[in-house]
Length: 285
Image (cartoon, rainbow, N blue to C red):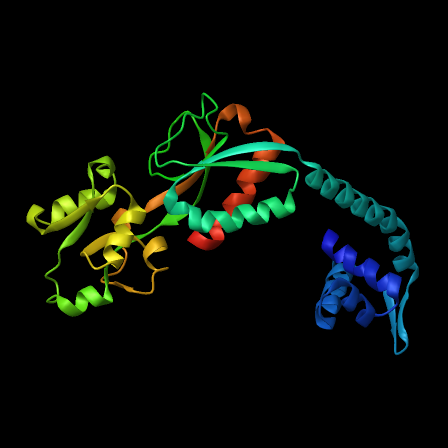
């Protein structure tokens, strides 16, 4: 037996018709019929007599209704109590993330606050890892292909990277003869920086910038082409993608916390919620 099928049965038994049950459940007439047929097949028994005036329980149906009704009421009570606990979650969560993720993260955080109004968020935008072991933050949300071994968490998606230039810049430059915007030495660890060192002569570097957001702005202003995060570049209508994203430059997005905090209810709820929200925007991890 499938509990979902039982809920359809209880709805028809309580309303006396498939149409009324469908309206109550927000499902189609055919879906309700299919669920009833499935339950009757699983139990190998007829639960309703079908009349033009409605559905009438058989003796087996009445027996099943009597057994399931208390379970249904208990499930509803559980749902109400758990929903009340969610609304009653209290406390502060200190979150650290990068400037590159803020644009997509803020709507997710707004949804979280609407769901859990008792939780306050303290957000620190910092492009280096804060020390979660010293509780500088409770949760870190950031791109990394090598997250620290002393933290636990889950992947929320993948950031893609591709070459971009502004439409105005391309109109003035011969095809393929580009000046380039590069990450500066503080971002030398990034895969974009490695790609530029391998593929672009030093004399072709027009400018270096100390943030990925700054690189996107420089490319948008027409200073040159750049290997940019698609997340940032695709949101700028003046930029043109010059080639498909390079899988070798993919970067995972992690939601991380200290092992001591992973069983704290508000932290568990937050990390699961944000992971689902970011995955919907970034695509599967």
